[in-house]
Every structure is written in C-alpha cells, then in structure tokens.
Image 1 (cartoon, rainbow, N blue to C red):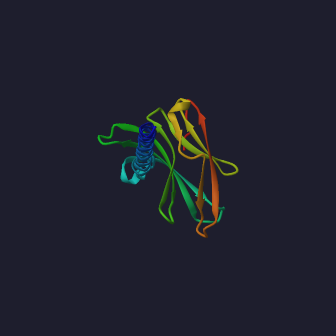
Image 2: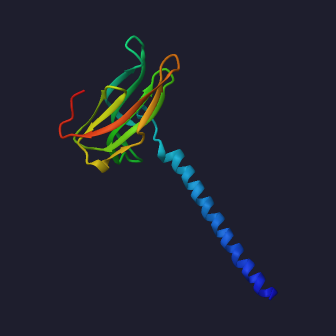
Image 3: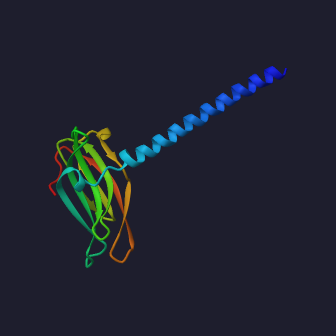
Length: 161
C-alpha cells in the first residue's frame, strides 16, 4: 500500500515538474518575442525610405502634435522582408507607435477622414495588411490626449498623398 502511494506521488510530482517547465518555457518565449520581434525598431533605425508624412494638429492654430508616416522598408538579417510600414511619431517626445505593416505591394497611402479617423488605402489582399493597433493616442504640446481611429480600405489605385 505504501509502495503504491509513493509511486502515485512520484508520478504526480513528475506531472507537476513537467507543467512548471512548460509554463516557464512559454513565459520566456513570450518575453523574448515581445522584446525582439513584437515591436520593431523605428524606421529611422532601419533600411527604410519615407514615402508620406501626414501632420496631425490638435486644433487649427496649434503646432503639429503628431505625424503619420508611411515608409517602404527592408528588414531582417539580410534585409529579406520588404514592405510598407505605417507609424505614428510624436515630435515633442520622439515616441514611435507602429500602426500597420504590409508586405510589398502596388501601393499604400494614408489619409485623414473627419472625426479623427485614419484611413489606410492599400492594394493588398485583406490578409496581407496587419494592423498593429485599431486606434492610437497622441498628445498635443499641453499634454492633452487625442485618439485616432484606424481603418483600412482596399483599392486598386491608391489616392495620391
């Protein structure tokens, strides 16, 4: 009886150890992904070419609070990946937020609609445009927050900036 109890306890302990190791590996892999893959370096630190800059003002008389910037980039160890990236940059704090990424295609441009909406015009299929954020928050020079909703629109001919 005591031998069966020890055997069951040993099996249970092996299961617990396996579960702890599995959770530790998952936790470490998520941390590594978040630090090195999830948010790439800003386009100024990579092989990127600026295609479009769209200034955002908090109101008509204020200075530029943020900029939407579209880049054509090559990334990777041997610059294997080529595509478009849409970023929000706050000039006062030099903070960067990635909004969208798409592999190389015919076109990708951005425009502002009324009521604080950013529209990404693209020629990609629906699955080839990855939105990192559905909305972004930026602050004006007084620190007041403003929200910009992000949407995409597929088109064959992107409107000129």
